[in-house]
Image (cartoon, rainbow, N blue to C red; front, side, top):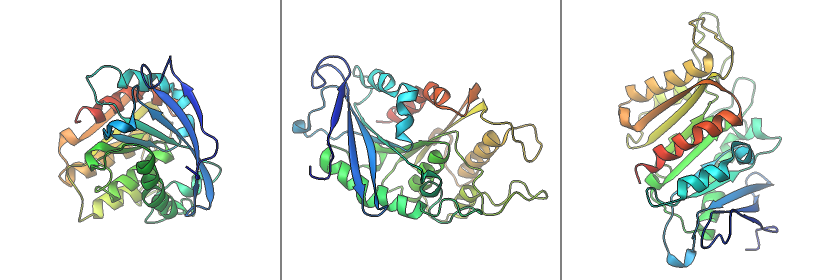
Length: 284
């Protein structure tokens, strides 16, 4: 494992191999992004690569924020018992280039933000996933692989998953930045030019077996650019869900969770996390 720096493992409970999940911290060098990216691997209790059991995988953008959501405790709860299959979660850390690496790979926004999103997509598909599959026993079936993220990281996860249904069977978006647009807000057409919406609206090839989970909080923000009484975070998300249904995605493949008094912050996303993981794992 010469591409790893020093590995630090924190065990939850007693022996990770026997009784409890474990967290392992790695640093991976990306040639595509020309930088090191730390990531955290959450492994279920009893994880043993020698068994050859292939685990479902969920990737998280903004993985450095998972501890603020008490993700370790949530992970332990979700992987305990036999009601749901054990899975592996990877939290990918970002850095000061977040506003450039996250976004939509097909184009940057009207301010040029997200200009490195094509490279970030390549990093995920061509570098990180092959690396993870070398190191851990992971399923390669799309239905067993999900990509999730928070805010702008949620937009990034949605964009990459949507573009690659042969890799990701599901996406999870917490307070997604679906306001991302190619032109600044036009007073006569405030909902026009939203990039992710146009990607879905113009798509001619897609996989209706993909599944999408969305969450918003009623206090995500205060902006209401079209003055319809619905904050933009919720309005943009509901519009995207409408676009998916108009493309023929069935109701059962799309879930929306709205949290009363939920804010644009890790505490709310942690509250929503068990719903996302339970929804994703329910199909396994």
